[in-house]
Length: 118
Image 1 (spheres, rainbow, N blue to C red):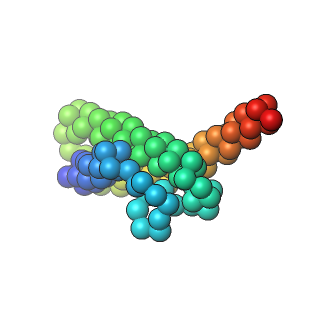
Image 2 (cartoon, rainbow, N blue to C red):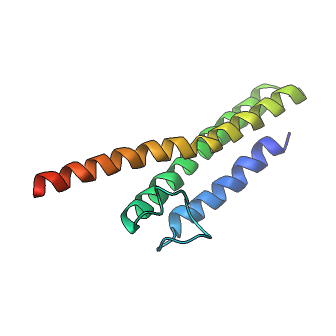
């Protein structure tokens, strides 16, 4: 039962660090690293800005909902614990398509603003 509190708490701590100390330059070690985010420093900044805040949001939502489950269900069956962990992991994996959609919209927006300036 402790895993449904511990896992989101640890990831929340790491995501707060990511928000507080974002990677400054494109690198292969730390940050949100995909081909679209590593194209230039502009996309790198916004990919890391967006994905770190997504992680904080997802971890807080998950942590709060898990605490509510613990408070209202005295004996949590292992199936429910497994389901809560799986839901958390799905939310973590969703960071990739959600951030990529954000980056593609950002790229279109930047391209349109460049066209209107010329």
